[in-house]
Image (cartoon, rainbow, N blue to C red; front, top):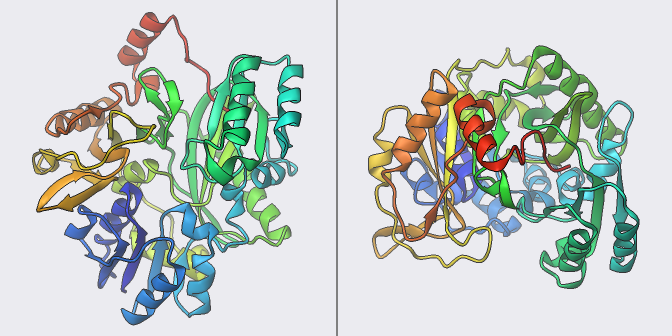
Length: 444
């Protein structure tokens, strides 16, 4: 089976690495890909925004399955165009993509019966949103831009002035571009964050194992939101009872609600959750695999990844046997440009990737890299994700950091506390240094 992976980040690198393990795979293509992907796949210089170009590439190269990584081409209708051309594609159609492409759509679908979410209001006028912020008596509150913002469009406002500043930044200053023309203001929910991703073929839902992302830029979950500074899988938060609640109260009802609304969903359905004393609450949905969650999930998958992906795309997921996983834990540490999540300057030489990848149980996924004049250099805010597997979270974490120590580039920044909420000694140290700030809290 010939496979085309659309995208150029760490998630897409993890997809390529996963399907390369399948006995069913033939050629692996990627567009546009990155230097890490190029070691395992044939890369083609087609931008993810070029829907017609992607369809032409898939047809010309005899592609049997296209795996679409980023959200942009999903919202733009790439899957629709591929299916119209007779090419199987893993991802939602344009009608379903607004579950992520619009926070307002997500909030409305999330309010269906049995799907617990935070209370919210949607605003299209900055003056109305500011007036609402001035009346709130519950702090902190959460401001979300309505459109796509690369995982950075969520602001936790702890005071009325902070909320007003966030509204102005999004709706008046244009900090998020068109994504900020409409915003959602939600109640803040206390608890512990958990990521759950499921494969959905329109009817059947196959829930993958749990993972935990680290969104904040700095140690202790402080600082601005990012696309993700690290992750691990599985999480001790996911008890059998919690799993049952997530599946029966959140994922399955959401899939049914989307079908009823004429937005039948297939592909990766990502639920960002808060585990509270009353049970799991939905914070957000994404319509693609999380990044860096996919980088810690797929290395643990022992079932045939390509069989799962093809069945999802072809509507035969119910025919696939139970998904099997390694008992190992995976931990991924993101190496970022020091200016991230702000504006970064690309072109910084990267050293030590081969040494890091030579460590046992380690995979280095390229997130924002390029080759110029024969040398590997930075090309984005998040540059690499160093993922390691081990018998325990501590073993995987220690192995990931040891490998990450081999890598250097100017201004490299990383969080030193990936996994801290589930590693006692690390959590205790940060709790003492911060007076428990951040523990048991998260953004709705």
